[in-house]
Length: 192
Image 1 (cartoon, rainbow, N blue to C red):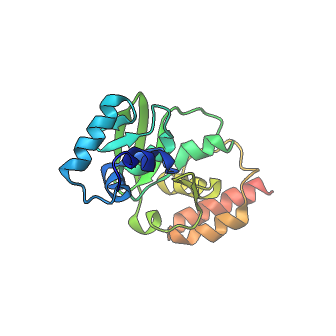
Image 2 (image 1 turned 135 degrees about the horizontal axis):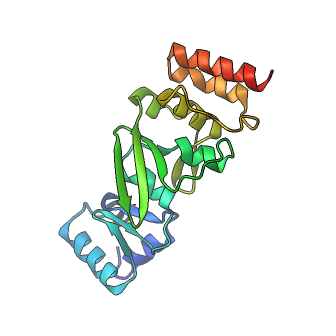
């Protein structure tokens, strides 16, 4: 790669958030000390922003949902973050909720991220997961089911926009009988 084209390669990318591995791949570099030196130089000049160790952005205006799914992979944005955005719950949450292979709460750049551990077979099944601008986000139906999977007594405010056909298409990946009963009950309640 030609000198001077390293930064341009990052700036032309659709991503707003880069891990060290992403940078090494984009720069066709196996992650050598030269990559670290270049990154440090661009950060010092103000051309790149260091979010936290191992994560970089084009600017301070990076996509926080994209970062949420890059910290621990595989993962996707779900639960209250999607439910509130879709009007299924009315409570506002300033945290970003993420389905992941582990449970963690972390703060980065004054943003709280809550990672909830979900069964690996569910986490890696892509049904109901949308990929929007470098971010994996659950559909409202998938977020609804993820939430029920974690808490069967969860109270939803508005189920009118739920596509029940999609819900019943996604439901088998959880393989939980009590959850199927709860979903059937909520379906009858909202359509009765």
